[in-house]
Image 1 (cartoon, helix red, strand yellow):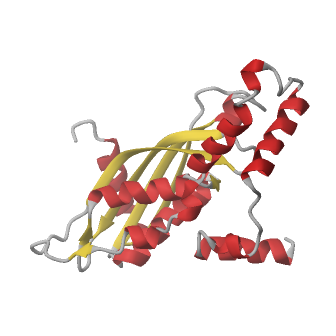
Image 2: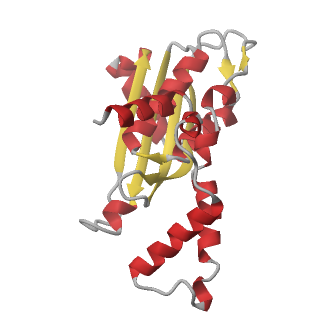
Length: 213
């Protein structure tokens, strides 16, 4: 890997806004002109009635799709509630819906994330875990990297006895192009602490998939 690209990748992982100090962000006008170029490349006329406002809409949509670059998971998880009356068992938030975009083709992948952890000194608001999923999903991603990022963020913020993350998704780069296998799903996991025990992994997976919960 190019040393400059490697450096940018490391800094991006450490700080979602690091690139802003290293790469000059294009203007709104430049972003819209890039969309016009892609429309022309696709074989259409960006000046026709149905497409005249498309560049502005696409640029606006991209700000929403990729707003995770401007957000920090550490700040989201900075408030830990220590008064949990000695609760020591697993905390599980499952079926957290998300959508992200593949960094290879910039097409969506959509699915659900499941996060479990064993508290040590406290717990975090349950909605915060869902927010962390969104922060990392709203970036150009691979599913594998996103899974690891979520687990690392929870582990670093809460310092629990263990973290488990399971992500399931369908990738449009497989459904819409290439092999075109609609319905194929990808599953990724990341475990820390107590969850490195295969027995705990089985328990986590069983709880995630149990229809009775």
